[in-house]
Image (cartoon, rainbow over all chains, first blue to last red; front, side, top):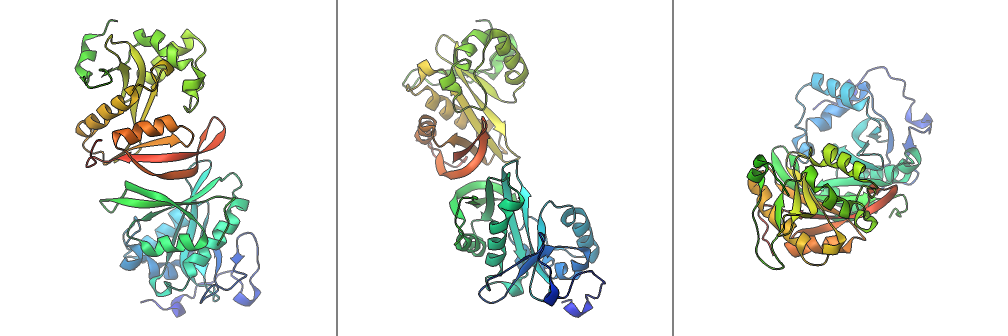
Length: 200
Length: 185
């Protein structure tokens, strides 16, 4: 497993004690249950941290993609998908290393879909919940035309359903045989959060 | 009403069960006057994405551009073979299709839409074996249409809030689905 010490690329990130809070950096002002997190844009210098979660079959189980097997493929993913993405952030602990990512992808002119992935070492600490809460609190200001933030979760992905419920997303129902995931047609639970909804 | 020879091949023959037989067939330009009966009606158009039609020329254009070119659309006809509405299937993706239907107001409340939906749902999985899910999205306020789907045996999966822009308003929509394995009511 790659260690963080190998991540020695030069980057322009400030040390965590001098983190600027700008429109791209959302810092948790309240502590989440075990760990304080912040969100920032993801860059190529996050490649080694990306590979930690992206190669983990436990993490990719409910993702549409298979685990990554080469650093080159990871770099290509960051270049081709992450950097051009309209809204994608690395989820970071105090040391500013990425432990996962969260994104909001437009579905159409009024709907955005939230998605998130966290390294399995960090599961069960409220980190995804805090990241989703931060995004739900801010995204409608950044995307004022958005009327609905939605999430589609595999029926078997109970952990992720709990994340959304804890934030205050509304569980609208199970959409049967809704999506093809790795060759299987899956039932998916639809959640939504509106600008007028209250965060829990 | 004349029909070309090749149109009879796609005729879905049909039900003689109550409330009275309806049949489904492709629409043609010669249906324009019957089409205008429902297409000009604001009550009918209320929950549709289109505005009421205002002229025969507009109707002819719409039938030519959108109806005749549609991948799967059938006129709903009574015994005299004149259309009282239509029903259609739209692709969503490889495994999902969406059903839609419209009926002239004079024929509401008689079970015709229910019968048409039942016929199409029964046929569509045979015609399109790759389809895993037939769905319908109905405005929360369109109770009549929700009842049609429930009577056929569609599952009401939930209300999708602020889901679609319809004529400039963002609407809550009820999602229904029917799977090849589902029973008809």
